[in-house]
Length: 407
Image (cartoon, rainbow, N blue to C red; front, side, top):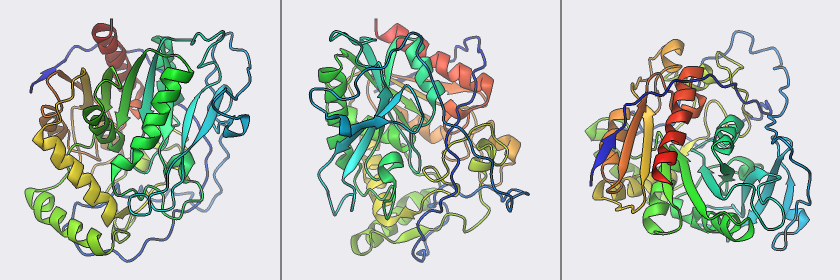
């Protein structure tokens, strides 16, 4: 297994920020945390803004329009109109509810996922608008709102689909414990259905799987488990290993696994328990960033990390280390610099303060035989939310790689 490094830097062009609903709905109250080695917690909270007492100004929905797009009936032969509704991003985005089989042991209480795409994705007269497509998988405590990412793919000739997985994002609204998924393979059902819709209903013949962070781990596991279902994999800062010392990764993981067996819902680190990081503050407009995502769907601090979830993540990360043997081309993108809990806001806006980029690079070699690693100077954890120059470089790097690998 080998990984190649692509250090070519295309000339970047700035792109504008996406916007979304700005909600302050609080995350569910966590249970008492267990005492485990430091470093196993989720992304810590941003510092409280100076004007916290003032109500935030409402933000309008993100709108990405397709030139010449005309409205058409939302439903299809396989999906009733009631299953497809206007999305929270506004026109031309639609949200399609995907029912899933409930799994009390793997994703308690979750009964559906949500596939998001543009109204004209299926085209007309049984011909898709674009023959190629990309399916995007979000990270933990996250959801799809990056419409500029979708536009970059659309401009490159790829229809864009995003899947809010069961209990997550749009599919986690009203859920008692969002993102409480104890085995990522439970998502196979909705990923399989999303790919069926993309290929069979909408007629796309080439599909790229694009995953960010936990979604990057999810995408890698899917591609390894289901050869032939996607044509390439693009990973944005994938969570391929647990950040922390060897002690945390070994003994800490063993303790988490033990806790998960008798109390999988146990919160192992309470978000906001310490001022350890400022990722949200560096990116969200409410604090110091340029983005307006919905804080009810992607809160700051993030949803609690529970023992069952992290134990499941560690099992899959060990699989990565043993080698996945993915048979399609893989692009792994990450920042050039990692920073930790004490990073300033300025540092947090031009580095990865969530994962260790050296770990990402090291683990990438175990994904398959055709891996390209591309580092983005001044990129943040979600490279699509980086500053304008780094964001443009990331998007150009992805499209250039796809153009070269998928002829």
